[in-house]
Length: 271
Image (cartoon, rainbow, N blue to C red; front, side, top):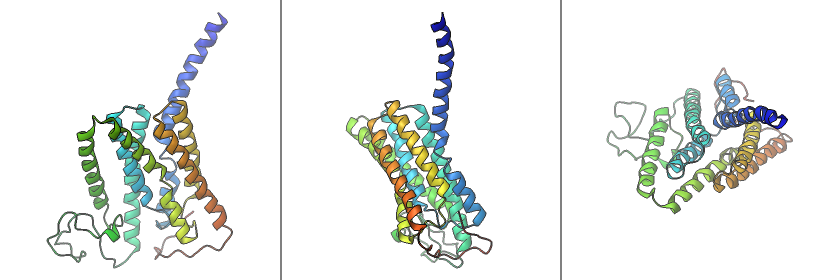
């Protein structure tokens, strides 16, 4: 009787824990970007945040969604990818608006062909769709260019996946590329900090949340027996996060390098 009563209590408790873990997986990944988003809006300074972080996460999560069509995994991981893509697009929109507003008289760069009626774009009226300067890849002046790039990547990779969906080797490789790309999430920020010899403008709270979230996520992968690619790359991601935290400590011991950008008159130093 006591065992039955105990089981009656433990059953709902386990269900609540499972729901909580699933909810943390779906929304936990976007939480670290909340303080960074608020810092950029408050200071009108996006120099400390590498938009290549957005590129890495967009590619990783698009590939993960395509991987799901070949090998179904848990629904929370699928929804996490959808929520993350939306979040990264919002981050890109804000960073693009802030950067353009802070830089006066810049030459406009775009992903797609320029409109000949746009006087700000000094380009021939007739350009092919992919006739863009690789030196300015992912440094475009309009949010719509980023959207066009993401849609193009999704269309091409989606078509290739459709053709090779019956190949288990292709599907497993796709899954590895998805999680390995995500494991490289912190590398753009790591490199940017190394170049600047400074972590000024980067939200330390964001990196701390990265570390705690990636640790939780990796444990979740292992306990729920997710595809092995997820667990291996999760461990790699935690290692990169810890390295960035070490940068925060090391660079705090030296004078901060002045930020090489023209600040908006109303901007202040980002946290």
